[in-house]
Image (cartoon, rainbow, N blue to C red; front, top):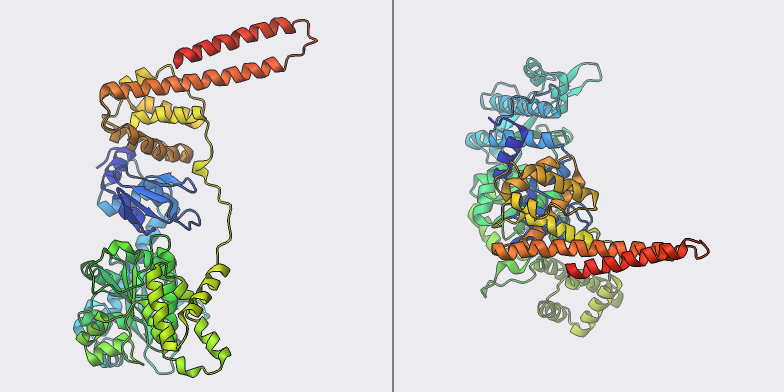
Length: 630
């Protein structure tokens, strides 16, 4: 057990992988030793957010936001320091310090109770179905059997039955949980007649697990023909956010990693049937459209970011496919081009593009569930092997209708539907190939099509925006030199001990309030820490309540990289040169101040000449001191 928060914090930080932590929120692409992505803290159009794993820091070179893994979690999840440490301690199986008193009624305590209640509810529903304890159990089993779902699948996916009666689940759970917890978990509702009733009744219950396997919500399918709605889903809660959870991910994530690809489907039964028949790398959104958070979540499991869209083949499904592809493209914007060519005939580097979107489209009228049950998993896999890229899927769908348009006006409107996605193709050779293919199919002059694309591009040029980059604002040379001097404390392979560096710069004064705080904290810690790594870790902990001081640490750590590998002699010379630079800047600053005083003297003042002579002497002396420093 850790004896203090500081000790626990260091243990947790040693176990955190900053790339993994940030990848939960940001899609990252490796370039050299760093990872880059779109900043989550401002509207970033080009990747300006940099993660440096070996230093354990992130920094946005546009908005200036910076920190370590703990700060990132605090910022993105709106949690305070102790909440983050408490959650991570539980995740890593670490005990909290004895001094920490767990407060009843906290959000964490409420969340734990909700998760427990939801898990018991899932087991309860499942037991009612398997043991046929309810009057509608057989009806549910017959329905599932028709869908090819047997007892083994029911057990694996914890499928259950909600009774017809109004309070069966409530009566079971009220013994151990308060009404408040059960209502917040979405298991019960307030009745119009007073009291509480079960939220789900007379429905097949499909429990929803998060990526860690915890039961967080339910999808409920109506059993009777005229029962509405057909699907009733849990509402968002403290433990469930449908925009961030994908159904089936817990059982699919290993297969997604193994296949380096994921199949996005629409419904619960699409996923259940497919996974049960050996197509294990598939998931579905939980009763909502695909979101950017869904895509970010998936990007953590497939390095190539190969995403197959396998929605219904009707018009609604095709719209969902187009909408899903747009969301995916938006998420990966700025990380490179979306794959827009099929290089199956050549060897290529998959890092040449940001992601790959393909569309699995079995015969008209059959969703994945129907197709897998009727034609089999092997037939589905063959369609998957031949799945076209999204751009080819778009073109083929539009070309199917080419004979429907006869007048020049109709043809012009029809041809305009090709333009937006042709304009997205950045590679000119690939674009030319597509233009030639479409033009030939439609009997057009390729030049006319190219002309329309250019007009479209011109009319959609982004407006010039004035972007203020905080991190590139002009800093005084003096402040930069002072930052550089502080960064020498953070050089990993320094041959000069921290105490000796402190002695070398003992006479240097700092002007900026934050730099003064950082320097005094380093002075205090240098007497207790054993190495630079410990110093950095303690600095982050010390400044947890001082975001300005904490934000400057990544800048100092980055600056320290320039001094790596220097001999003790060269490193000492660098420190002295930086001190000289600070002193020189200060001398220049003082000279400027004296000059202002000189110019401000009233010539009619009897003492004016005497004061001017004194000031000239001071300027001369300061210049001489500055020359010696050089």
